[in-house]
Image (cartoon, rainbow, N blue to C red; front, side, top):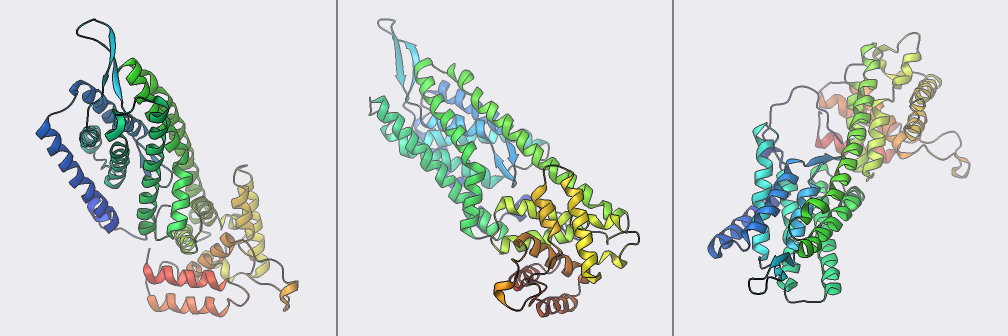
Length: 441
């Protein structure tokens, strides 16, 4: 999820945005690359023609890398090429020097040569991005490098000692699955630290986000390795096509997600432009809601829907004849609050694809507990997302863009006093932790 700041922020270099876990990963990867290049330089490059061909494929893959939802940088073509090089058993067919028969030449490159070729290819492919001011995701590059290194270290020592293709294919599958799981675990650890979410939640998000792409990349890498052994380097041109199609599909999916979010953000500004709410109110409520959702362990897909709902929670105010002073719906009557939420939900339903978001907005005006004193007769509370939006909206209605900590603390205390019926006390405490950690957005 994106984070919105209130006011100008000083420009930050890419190194200033890297946390300690990412820095450790990058440093370790850099040290590993230095060792690999030094070793290859000392013993010379094995089968340089093959190394150059795979290096070019890796560089092209890095050149055409993409950013998936959740700000995940991926380079499936580069990964498939690098893992394919790590899994390579031989290169054929090649003419035999004595009897001119066709013969497969065993691949004799070491695991460290795989790491060195991959690192050089990634660097070359990143140069055009750097030249136009797009800094690469160093932690994402380090994870891709480790994925390839794991496959190479697991497979290469035994690649030329087995003649059984069934066993080789099984070992290829085990190595790629292990590498994918390591990549997911490392990514989840970094994401948990970066966005302050529980590791279990981050791990589930990473698995859902990467499972399909990881399967396609691994299958293509194995196909490249087997086909190159049988057909020679020309197989790279043929068997890279499936991952190209997969990358195109994922790019389209990422583009649709980005377009949805941009459209929702533009729609949320209508109430500000019309003078119904204060400038920046929807963005601030959205930021608070997403931060609280993370604090309460919501999944990434749920956070995206929460962000949509928070951005559009006040769109029903467009139906009002006279705007509420300051746009503060928390000061309106319960009947008026429900009417605004229901009208907003009707507007959102017209999109045809955001029904769950509309349901969240519709229930965001409902109190946490209603009516009856006996627990058995109480209706079920609204969904968590609706309760989060209700608390975030009330806080920003009463605090606005003020940086006064005493005012924020007073509003939090007021929300706590109303938590017996109006607000979910768990959500209010999550808001308190978010505000204490980041007092102003």
